[in-house]
Image 1 (cartoon, rainbow, N blue to C red):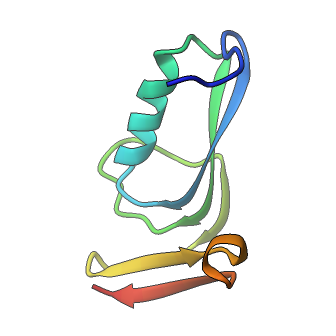
Image 2 (image 1 turned 60 degrees about the horizontal axis):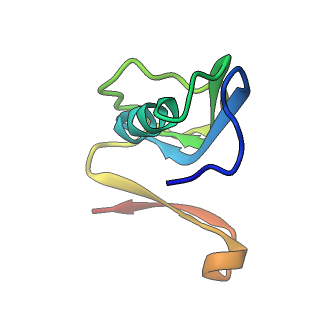
Length: 91
């Protein structure tokens, strides 16, 4: 993979739609560190639904939406899905 820019000493903000267990964010941080050592890594999420399995906390949160483990949050974007929406769906 290629980033197209240097991350050594940079301030990085990871952006994710839904923060759940923290495993995806952990994988993203691990992948970033393969490219160098940024000065800091912050996390911005549209939705934080709780249920963390790892000690990951978002620095910027659009909305906290507590859910059960049986529920999923579906995020749609106009450019991709034809609408901007956030829906709670029972799995």
